[in-house]
Image (cartoon, rainbow, N blue to C red):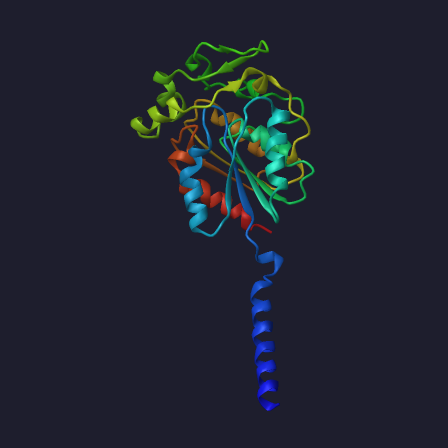
Length: 262
């Protein structure tokens, strides 16, 4: 009987210890980071950022952005957010900023938003109008002849021989050339669609961009960061539009700040 009692006590202690170890306080759970690419890119543009986040213990998802319409793309990303159990940090690059601004609406688990050289439109604004509001953008002259779509719309690509200087000037030329080959087109309709109510008015937002951005002028990016009452804004000197590719550590650091903020 003594042996049985001792065994029962031992099992009880082990069970209590195991239960305590598995029941981590909710506050200690690291948010899942969902990375949303923009036009003329894909999820591989986040590889350096994702590697750093993963090494620091974060779960990372590279969401596929259809690049068809703000509303439709936001719905696609919102479905990814809904699939995550626990808090989420939504990160958007370029046009992806317009997408996360809409996708976060009504999603109680979204903790914060991070805009990486990204649009943060207010209601009624379009990506096309915002990019041309300030001087310095040269995307228009770098675009290839639009590809006609069956519905009467158009798809835009950047000319491959202009991609390096226009989109990724601070990325090695060989790497930029491969990025040009694999670029994802964006529908004209997505660039001209007016934004709805933006989530950045209700969620903590963070901004990082390059001062040598030729797609979205730095002045426009700074304006949107200030308007959104950015908790922290980082302007990377000399960085191109793909600051997440050329400066992954700086971008990952800001994302982690957003993830850890109270």
